[in-house]
Amino acid sequence: PKIVIAIDGYSSCGKSTTAKAVAARMGYGYIDTGAMYRAVSLFFTQERVALSNHREVTAALDKIHITFNHNARTGKNETCLNGLNVEEEIRKMYISNIVSEVSAIPEVRWAMVAQQQKMGRKRGVVMDGRDIGTKVFPDAEVKVFMTAETYIRAKRRQQELLEKGELVNLEDIIHNLEKRDKIDTTRAESPLVQAPDATLLDTSHMTIEEQVDWVIEQADR
Ligand code: C5P
Image 1 (cartoon, protein in one colour):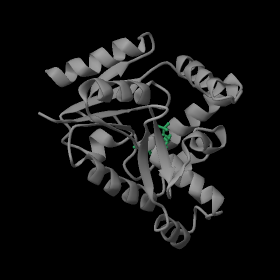
Image 2 (image 1 turned 30 degrees about the vertical axis):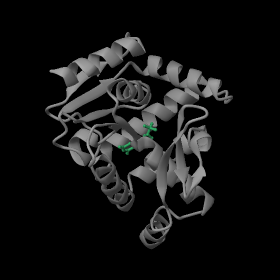
Image 3 (image 1 turned 180 degrees about the vertical axis):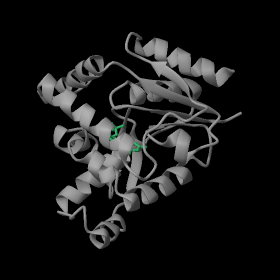
Image 4 (image 1 turned 90 degrees about the vertical axis):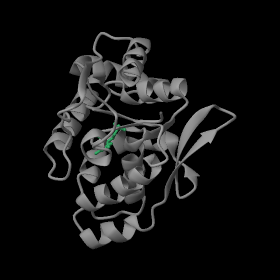
């Protein structure tokens, strides 16, 4: 039977890498909800939307259309903002530096959650984010809550950025991770919290393969 696998947790714990691999092995769809908040942040930056102005925010949200495209040539998933591939841009540090502020805006969350629920309705999906098991799919069959030591998360993120050609100080990354976690866990609208029925997974000393096997084992139960 096709099910929803919700993978939530702190930034840079290996959620998306794991979720992607689990989806591939199970023949499921994969939805990166963080990419959606990143795409919204990019649009708001481009359009110079004042985050505190609710009318501006709502009007801008009406102009945003986010889709995921599987590029057959590269074999990679691309996040598209109004039809344009923004995958590379949304991973940059300047987006990471504002995304939590953007994702804390209730109107932004309402719009994204509604879209995510629609995307997951055809079932058989792995979705990663911060509020999947608590808000988007509270009745998901499998719920995983990921965590890892800050230093290890920062090293992983630094390596990822480096592979994409962006050299960032470890201190700046640690500062960004801690700041995002703080905003994500303390915002009013569906804050980041472990769902009571989610299983905790500390990935600090696990390989990606081990993480993938572990999640699939949960799904097989
Ligand atoms: O997963 P990723 O690090 O790309 O997410 C970027 C940011 O998007 C998070 O720090 C968080 O502020 C926001 N987010 C969220 N809810 C989700 C997914 C991401 O608030 N379901």
